[in-house]
Amino acid sequence: MTVTGATTSVELREHNRARLLRAVHACGATRTRSQLTRELELARGTASVLVGGLVADGLLHEEPSAGHGRGRPTQIPGPHPRGPVALAVDLREDAWEIAACELGGRLTVLDDWPHNGTPARTLPPLGDALRAHIREYGSRVVGIGLAVPGPIRDGHLVDVAHLGWRAVDVPALLGALDVPLQVSNDTVCAALAEARRGRMAGVQVGLHVHVDFDLGGVLVVDGRPLGGASGVGAEFGHMPLTGGTMRCMCGAVGCWGMDVGSNALLRHLGLPAGGGKGRDEAAAILARGDAPARAAVAANATALGTGLAALVNAHDPEIVTLSGLGLDLHAQAAETLEAAFHGRLMTIRRDHPPQLAPSVLARRGPLLGAMESVFDAFLTPEGLKRWPGA
Image 1 (cartoon, rainbow, N blue to C red):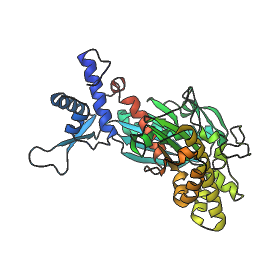
Image 2 (image 1 turned 180 degrees about the horizontal axis):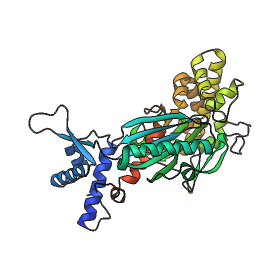
Image 3 (image 1 turned 90 degrees about the vertical axis):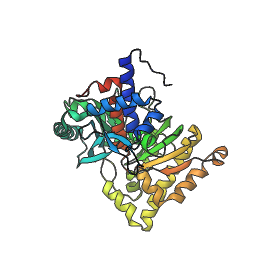
């Protein structure tokens, strides 16, 4: 039996409504009502009443299961066509992308626009775009999840070293949105998505690394990225793991992120790097295939494998997952990456090393994780009270 804090029948009903919606969302709206009833240990009659109420409130819609046998079709609860929508934003160092996400995790990209990297000319236009989509979806919007490429303090102050952002008040520059806003680090978002919908689902201890202009990493324990005591943890890219001597724009010397990512590819070939520019040039390097380009990719992969080994020696994860540019490094230089990784593991780690695995979510991890942050807040008894049909 599930232990709850509910003390009245009304509180128990609200608790079970949230549990049922969370289960539908977590499985991607793929399980039948009967399967959900068993998994949540609900009485059949209770489940029927709960689903009926959620359908009436515009939170769920049921479809017959494909391939059912004779008799009454088995129903699969899923997102209501006028149900809740989370707006997810991946704010990268050179562009931002907005997606609308339904219960169950289906994602529809709405916008993908470049920006010039300055807070005053990036965040207000993003706020305008979000307000336009809020008007489009109306009361269906239950929140906004924003993934940003830097550490976050006090839930709203953002630092992006390579853009020169220092204690930027993101909500203030976005302007009034009139819906809940969740601001999260992009690597933390990617790791959360991997734990919910990727290779780290069901993993007790995992390590996720997201590579873009540089890289970030976070330890994931029981499906939860560890953000540190003040929420400014998960900055593995600013650890001196590869013996470098360059000063990073974060203020430290020898950061691992100086040797891995798009900026590192450009620097290896003597090209200008930094300032949130160079993504297209880095993509061209990956596609070239000539000797200098291969050497730059190999140097990136070696530095990535070296740093990963240090983190594995320290944290003992079951699996290491890679997203962003990490997918390209794994695809193009897997042998180099694996050699650097295994060669620097402790002997006791080398006997049973964790798998190095590219994310199955492609490059959608930050968006999907931003979505999860919104639904985590909404799919609670208190959050559901904000729904117009409640």
